[in-house]
Image (cartoon, rainbow, N blue to C red; front, side):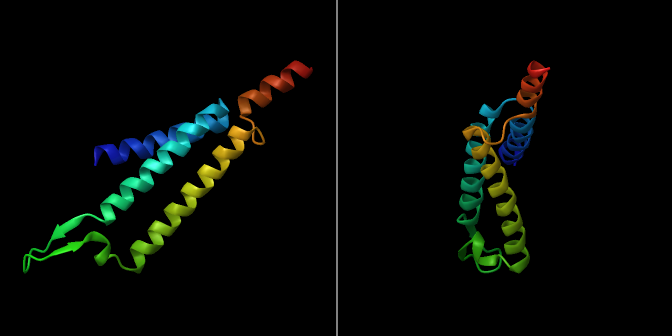
Length: 107
């Protein structure tokens, strides 16, 4: 549980830092997004043992449509963050601090 929360907090903090401070932090956002997707996939493929008859099943076998909607919304959010990070790394979406420094030099 702690590592999942840490990965999400790192993602959010570095996503804000990418937009506000330095665009190089976009690489950390992409890495954190990959780690979060890997952890979610590993959790879904985890074998669990039934408390009723002792048989084993995969965790994704008990997902319902509500879980699918939550995963879809989270996936869209991660995709937006990754696209913004890639754009920032390519230079088409500069950080606000860099824009401010560039505009201060023009005056």
